[in-house]
Image (cartoon, rainbow, N blue to C red):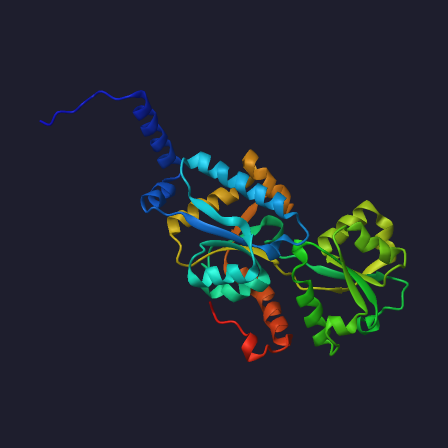
Length: 316
């Protein structure tokens, strides 16, 4: 019989206990760890909207540190700076150097074929899509969309409004009207929501674009707004921001990271992320929920002027 040394240090006992707990709570992570899998994460700077870059970086770094503390090892790492340009992110997905990515719907359309079809992570309140509204005063001369030719409008500068140009462009085109830059006399972007709605109310501006959910909140706070203003146009339900996984990522590692994201609201370090996104949590949906959004993006891209051959970028 082989000699078995029963002597074991306290540190060794604790190490084995920790490993047992981790295996019980997250067996997929143990498999991922055995594979040596660390998912590479990046977010597009386009997803920030008017948010503060440093605050966003800090929120993500604190959250990832929390995940490291839970599992005793890295399951994911962000690229330096966390946020990258749109071109860098799309190139990274196409080259397979990024495993998880936060992108706008405009960027997602470029990498959807490379994205795992069953593992899209969305903010809970975006899961069913959101609508945009174009507000005018009820007693104004603007009764039809065409009446806004030459009008001055303001738009809410917010990450959830990244598809606003696509909506305005496709809506105007469907009504045989010029592109927004030629149709409106001006469209100013403003981050303060009050300064988007109130100028229309006080007749200082002709119209305003914002998310319908923000408009409904404004009415709750000031019912008079709902009496004097109305939505001249409402967009289809769209999903502006998504988190996707490359289709070639490890299924085990992907599941562990998704589970961590879904539990982010319950961890103190994750509450910064929740506050940053102004949501209560995240849900997982199939890529098929993006159908209407991707159709709008496709129609919008068709309206864009053709680039000269010398300016076109390759697939990388």
